[in-house]
Length: 178
Image (cartoon, rainbow, N blue to C red; front, top):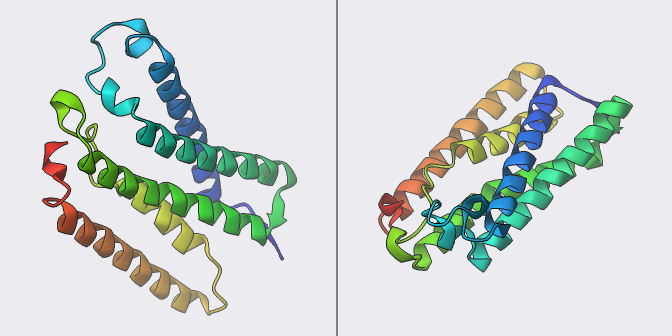
């Protein structure tokens, strides 16, 4: 089964370009001697950003965004792709969304000098948007009105689950110390 590209997909691919640029900047920063572009003591989050666990999380995000971008590029060129590729994009979106929660846990479990933990991480609203993209892009074999109701309810439930889990771990993972 083939599927056409939608406006929602174009937005996702545009965001993937920005995410790739920001991730490349991250790798340039941590590769520079003495923190940000060689400026000593400029980056207070340098210990956090150069931790091997955080680098692994960022690498997984980078590979996921690169996968979304490459599939999207082929999709834009061909105008249609097999729906199995859309499922791969869904997998990448879910992986990116879950990576923030892993980063919350990882940053809260280990100590990074003066900053205590996490580098300014807040509620993962953008990651929630990726999950909502998956919900709204997934095809259900139902009447349009039912699809809209089901997808709206699923989106609201995801928001409530994200918010509830965030509030549940807020004190345990010391997210207030971000």
